[in-house]
Length: 433
Image 1 (cartoon, rainbow, N blue to C red):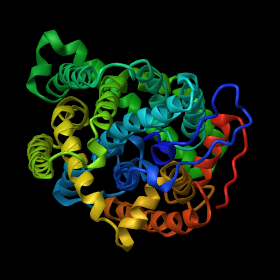
Image 2 (cartoon, one colour):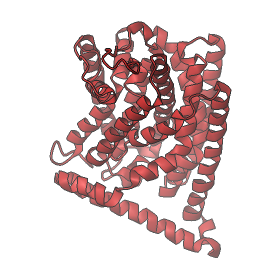
Image 3 (cartoon, one colour):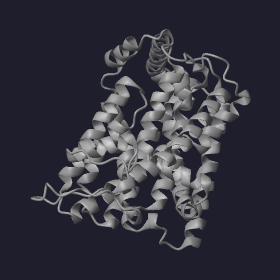
Image 4 (tube, rainbow, N blue to C red):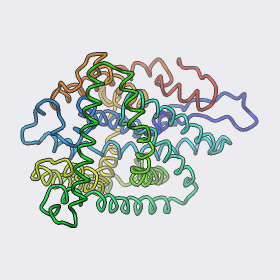
């Protein structure tokens, strides 16, 4: 998640040989307000991206026919709106912020005599949190592979800014081409007359078998979630998806590593401080947002014309959208950096506070959704259509905005931010202000 706790809080580091020295929390003046604000919006947006997979079978995230009730989305326009505006963009923002937070933490650590081993240990605890999240709460965890990719980025922090930016951009472009080469042909083989050619007949059969296997797994997960059998839910995750965190890091690192490097470079260049030419930032931000949005809309219309098929939606999400997604993610980042200094009203302060407690909000939201949807709690899994799921999202947003600011007025960190900090440094820090 964004170096969630300490893009927010930098955190002091005891100089070697001074282990008794108190490790001071970041002072208000040390904070970069745009990081808190962007992170707050992103942690809210990530729930909007994931809500369908929380409340319906996992495949429904992309494939509307997986809904267990009528989706409540005539013409698929809500699917299109989410695809264009939300899906992948929040993860992209998180990833860039993670890179920025990683180098922010290390700059302060190096200034106080620490080494990269401190950050490596910190990422190890993030991996532990991520695996707990994955196996016990939510299959869509990103913390575990962020931690593993973060270890690689640590090795690149001494590169020049130019090298970081060039490797990040070219690496992302190479990854987008690879995703397209791997995923786009699947929809043509599975859904068009191309698959009827004898050359592709075996592949088409394999694709259908793979689809049915995924949908069958959804059926099993639905049964254990609706039954209230939490032990069965965890057991199924271990038995059938034990190595999924590892496959996720292998698959998503093609996108994650370059975006983290871009985040590192942007931080080094002073991007998040708003020190660039504002007129140029605004112009290029809107260009990226509009161009990327129009390309996403074209992809979504193509998926709609094909009937939102399983492999058509998979191709749209994974194969076609990475490059236009980069345009949108960078455009959003630029415009949010410009907006952050003006977001000082009631709502802006609460969004920034949600960003300061984003680690707690991210994992806490997953726990809340576990309670809302699983059979041993409120039991709404598979019962709500898309508009109703968005209403759940709205309520969760209200909870995030309601608790974060009052908590941080009384306490130095969010609850999980504090725990992560204590585990990282191996000592208990004061929580109350």
